[in-house]
Image 1 (cartoon, rainbow, N blue to C red):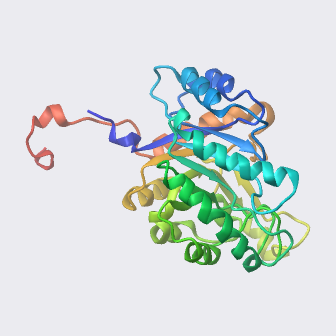
Image 2 (image 1 turned 45 degrees about the horizontal axis):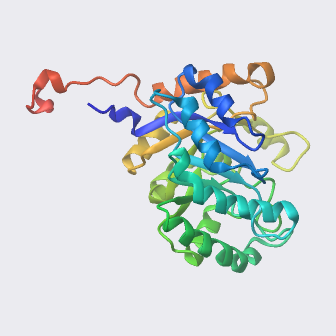
Length: 310
């Protein structure tokens, strides 16, 4: 019987822009990860993605591990050299996702730099309407990461998909069914938004989930506010932050989500550097536990009868 617990897999992100994604997957594939998200930062550096996909799949071998999503993070709405490379990277990831076994490409929307968020909507519609059609023709979904990258409603230089009010505007501009969100609770907590009601409202648009959390220091908020010299929030690896991931995964299941929760490391102020993989493996096991623990197959016990009678 297929393990229904793995309808939501727990994995991690793997940097792909440096050319070592397949080798990295091979190094950590036996640590218990069930999925990987290879990701590029601004550029693919001219890599042959068909070959990279083949090598990543070969590195996984016969292990029960999937690659559902590729990441392409940059600003595809502007015209600088790296921005244009990001836009081309989106096209290349969409065209080559199948070589990885992926059905989703995720990243930032981009933004018209240093302008109010709404000023980006015409350019957003122009670029993403075309990319949505390109992706739909190949059976690929596009998921927008919900990180503000230090921007806000008035200004920024990476992403407009960081606020539910912005999502309403975006999906009105581009109502394509294959455009959605790469969601995580961290970026909601950073802006003091309760993530659980958000899942219930936006579940149909959540195509991929990042495993990243946050710790809000409410004592700092009460004494110094959120714009003072003292940090009021820290990004955390799951299991070390404020979110109740048992509730998050339950809400995702209730909303019909099936896919991966890929841990986004390299942000935790404690479990970093030499402790990075210690924190990630702890998060992996924590999230598996929050998913319900080991799957118990009762089909053999009732042999076709009603399992509710057991």
